[in-house]
Length: 165
Image (tube, rainbow, N blue to C red; front, side):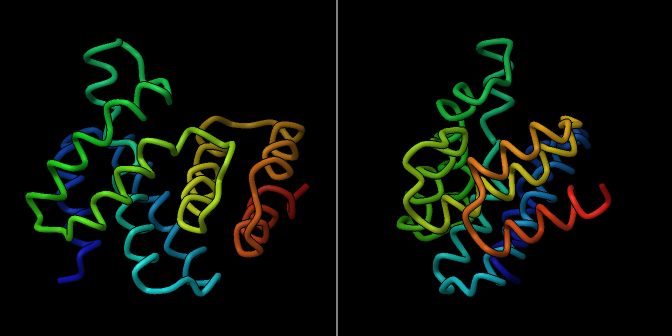
């Protein structure tokens, strides 16, 4: 069984019954996987990206319990510890866990994006959030200009949000 399938299964169990959260991380995963493959990133980075996409919002449950908020900075604080535990139990390599946890701790921080896995994770999350948050055209244009750097991500963004206007 592929590692990403094991992580997806564990995350569905983690968020059992929370269809909104499960739907979100599965969509982010699909976009991250697609962008990563279209950008032809190396296999190790693709694995890290896919696991990070599946687990990126794992901190929401504890954020809502502790802070009564799902704000991004709380997710960045609470997510890495939860992800570490889940991934360790799945016997994921420690180097992969470390990078995934770092990505979780920064996935709502948009300055200083310096690596392709980080860039693609942010793009994939925005592709999903734009629809879920019903962003208006001017906000979409701003996000595209400020966030999107990969050719695959920009193409998907245009195909999804601008081709029909």
